[in-house]
Length: 140
Image (tube, rainbow, N blue to C red; front, side, top):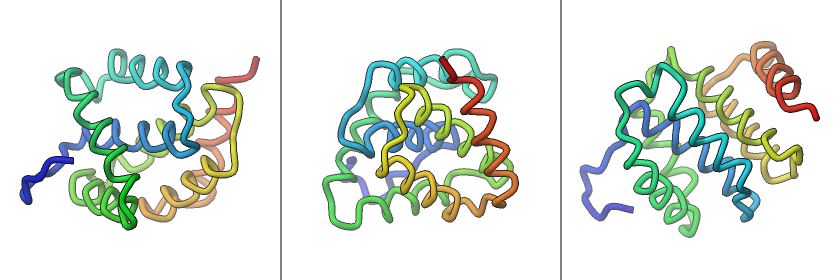
């Protein structure tokens, strides 16, 4: 992570960080998850003006934070500061898509999704609809 105390994320960085966090949560970043993240950054309108070179910087930041004792709390602090409320459900939808990308939802991914729902204050009914959509998109 940047040693700069004024380090902050943009809204798009926050979305990338959430996707990377879900992928890394089980300590096994799968190719299908990386492809899903890259596709989201390349295709979604929210990332239209995003510098895709930031992907590696944000990924390294997330992985560095995961090595620290309170790293997840620090990550959520950065995300809450940078992510406007209007993008909270978008963030959760992207997280669900990455979690579902490899067809395996492990316990650690499920716990992180639950934490994301809590941290971003996603209504349970809305979360269920988002989860259902992700499941439907990733059926094989």
